[in-house]
Image 1: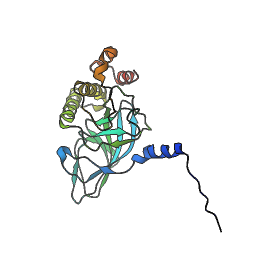
Image 2: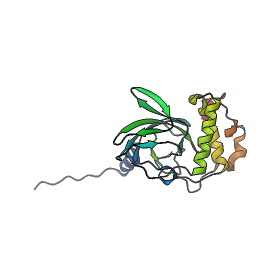
Image 3: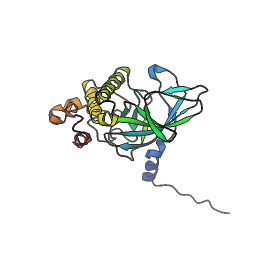
Image 4: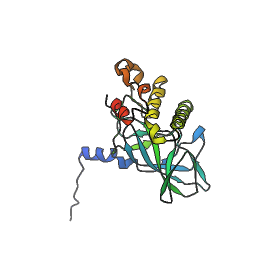
Amino acid sequence: MNKIARFSLPATLILALLSSPARAKSYTAVPGLEGQNTKLKIKFVKYTGGATGKMVVKVKNTGKHGARFKARGLYFVPNGDPESAPQRLGAAGPYEVEEQGKWRRTEDMMIPPGAERELRLQVFCIDSHRSSPGNKQGFQVARERMPAELRSKISSGAKAIIKKNKGKVDSANSEIQGYIWETRDKKWIKLQGERKQEKSPRLNRSSMGNSLPQAISPQQGEGAVQQRQSR
């Protein structure tokens, strides 16, 4: 009688498989604005950047009617233990969608029933005291959007900064990042992926000195943002 060979994977390998970015590559519901139901589904593809960057996602409409997609208030939680995970990332400003081989920016688009779109969301770190995520970091979209007050401030602030920069989104990124950190620190709101004792930046202002978010200007560029992240 043939014997069936039995084997088991090492525990470390099992944990690695369970926590790998590939685990996040499944569709989940797009949280609606103001509690509205939606038939849109979203899937994390990859992240490229540091303190700021592009979150590549796929969004599909599983409903029978067209549905509008807005990124305002969406944020992404890094895979892994929150106690050691890097910063969470929040969407702000217009996102990019590919149409006929070209990428265009928009803040609101209609997705036909059954259609899927690949988007590049402009995202920013929302936890100034945590480390910046790397390109290999996996993420999952939060179950709910940011609370109305927080997402409204971030959205309106980002729009004003982009307008001040004459619509040049890339030139405004550093200032938007600083504004988001400052907004978060003024009134800390717990979000999904919170640590047991989240180290609020408000408690460490004395040690930050001139590296406070409001000290970052568009003229200083991305280097200032990265330098602050390394502290």
